[in-house]
Length: 145
Ligand code: DQA
Image (cartoon, rainbow, N blue to C red; front, side):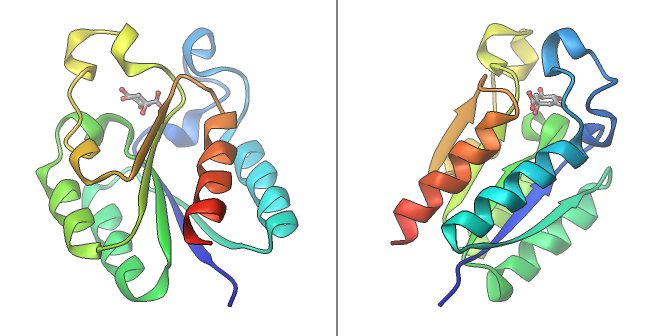
C-alpha cells in the first residue's frame, strides 16, 4: 500500500524565497513542494501538500489526517510557539509526526526555543533548510517500513 503523507505548512511560509532569505533561504514553498513530490515518487509515496495562515485550517487538516494519512510532516511556523490547539490535534491524530523547521530555532530568539508541537513529534528536524522536508520524508519511508 502506498504511504500517504500530509505535509502541512503554517503562517507566512507562503512568503518563502522573499521573507528573510538570510534566515530561510531563497527556495520558495513551490520549489519545496516540487522537490518533495519528486522524492516521494522515487520512494513510492504519496504526498498532500498544504499551506495555511489560519490555525483552524491547520487543525482541520490534522483531523483529516487522522483518517486519510499515514503520517504528518508539519512546519507549524509561528504557531509552533503558541498553539495548544495544534498540540491537541496532533495528539488526537495518533500518527507519526515529523516537525520541520527551516532554521535552527534554538539558535534564534528565546521565544522560538519552546515548541508546543515537539511533545507530539516522532522526530524533529531544524536548521537543515529546505532539505529538512526531504529528510523528513526519507525518515518516514524508513519508519513506516
Ligand atoms: C520556522 C521557525 C519559526 O520560529 C518561524 O515563526 C517560522 C518558520 C522555520 O521554518 O524555521 O515562521 O518554523
